[in-house]
View 1 (cartoon, rainbow, N blue to C red):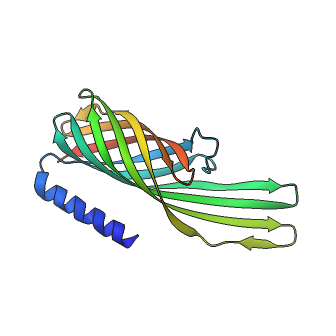
View 2: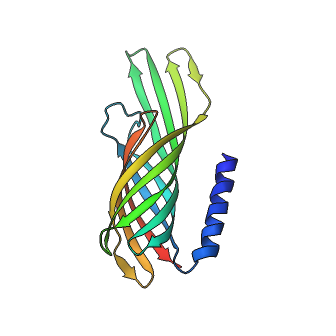
View 3: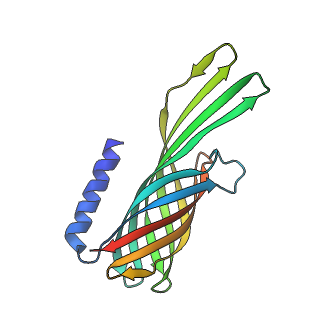
Length: 184
């Protein structure tokens, strides 16, 4: 985990030094819904935020790096009225990929992702309680999405996007993000 954060800081530093006048930085909240697969382990709606860096490659494309934190509220399942199973879930997506603009307003994105997923499971019955500690693991996947980016002030854009993310451990979800991007 520490190596990934250090690598991200180096990449951001290089980007800032090379194209400081063209970089976009953004931040925004995300609302997450379970995906389409039916195998999704996403228990319910999740909430989080993402930090977004974008560096132009051509006039209609750019390279995007996004780091986020998404938390899912605890889910409790009743097991035959004998016990309750509790599940807590957290995802830290790190995304890197192209962003292609169809016009000044509409864009498409396709990202490779590394997910850091943490889960906590607990079991409670009438006479005992067993609670597991949080375990973190890494998963690889990808995401595709569409968005619009209207200008709301000089060098400030509203970024509204919808993304579908899927990885190797069947965590798939749909993300709705409304953020602000600032062009340096």
